[in-house]
Structures are given as structure tokens and as C-alpha cells.
Image (cartoon, rainbow, N blue to C red; front, side):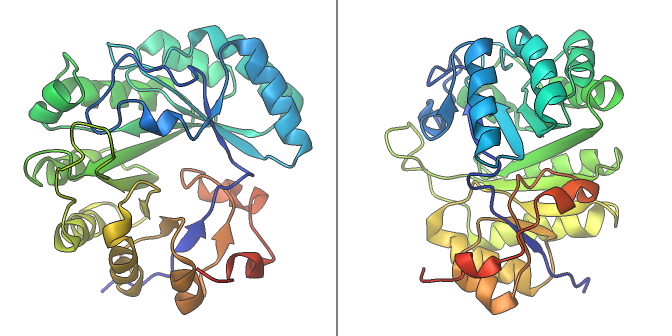
Length: 298
């Protein structure tokens, strides 16, 4: 079996997430309903974003993830922020990652020209999930087409994310891997459905450990050898320790976000304080030399 010791990614305060729509989301997917926006930093206009980032950089921030609520058409309303993003990149030279949702050629070009480094992009190829869970009048082909647009016209690094367990069955996740393999991605990030309180899917069962491991094992087998595989920050606490241990122990992932401290200690994982989408050639900007701060009690 292919063996690898993954890097532990702990974004923390060095790579914060910022919602450019505050707590507002027009899409209200059934598994979130805007809940995950609450824990982000909030801005409501481009000027607020600039001054927030200016203060964050003074505190040692080296990168930001720009996200927020999506429109009914499934995109982040990022366009009014593009001039400010350009200024932020020029004045502070931090890594800028954007979670765009759907996007057209014109906006993809503008994101690249504004200095955005990375795009986080979910690949969802289950028609039921697209229509009934995400409330979108889209198709799997629309998701693939947008990914192609981002690769051709967008920033240099496009990081596809595959959610595991949103649908009624674990099938479209394998299809997503088959689709992505032909695009030779530099990374594929797997997320795992979390039943979130006060959402319609709160009582939906979490994916089994076996299903999560099987999907990621398939990804390791089918994706190019140079494609890094990451276990992202979204995964339920009820299976986190077991899933993390199995994946790390069997060398199935290259990156893991916020693993339990017991996993860091057990496998003596190297720590990088950044979003797991950051490409390998930029990791030196975020490496944490003194890892002992993270190795206290659970």
C-alpha cells in the first residue's frame, strides 16, 4: 500500500475565514441553513474587508479564505469586492483563497487578475442533492462545466472538494473522483457530512467509517500519484477520531485538517498553520516550528 505521513493543517488565527455576506445566505442548503457562517469573521462591504484584513495582518495573518452566503443561483456575490481584493493583494501580499460557487468566464478572469491565489470549489454530482438539498436549478454537468471554466480562466490553483454523505447513497462521490482524475488536480479535498442542529438534515445518519474510508481509498487508487488527498475540516465528531486514525495509519491522505491532538502525538505529524488548499510550494510561508503548543491536553 502507498505509505505517506500526512501534514496536519491548523488554520487557526493565521488563516481565518471571512464571510463577505455577514450571516446572510440566500441558498440555505438543508445541511447548513447559514449556520457555518456564524463562526466566520463578518464584513458587509468592501471597505470593511480592507480594514479587517489590514488589522489581521498586523496580528500575523498570512492568508484568508473569503466565503459567505450564496445566491439562489449558487454563487458568492464577490464581484463588488474585486477591486479591494486587488488592493489587499498589492498592499499586504497575503494568500487569498475564495470559495466561489458557480462562476462564469468573465468573473474567473477577474478573480485571477485581482490576485486571488486559490479557488475552493465543491464538486457535487448527485442530482437529488443539487435539486432538493442545495435548492439549485443546476445539473452535474453545470458543476463540471464551472470547474472547467475555473481551470482554464481562473487563478492558478483550483482545489476541488468532494462532500461525502450528502445524498441518499454513497455513489456520486465515486463518480466525482472518476471525473476529476481526467483533470489532473493538484489536490482533492474530501469533506464528510455533519448532522447540524436546527437544520432539516439534523437526524440524517452520518456516513459510516467504512464508507468514508472506501471513498478516500478509491480516490487514492484512481487519482494521479501527484494529486494530494486531503481530509478537510468538515467531518463529524462522532467518527472523527476513528476515521482520522484509519486514514493516517494506512497512508491514504497527504493532508488532514484539525486532527485530534492524540493523532498529532501518535504519528508525530508536522503542523502547518494554513488552509489545506494551499499548494505545496507555498507551505513554507505557514510552517509552525514550535509544535508543542498544540500537543497539550485534548
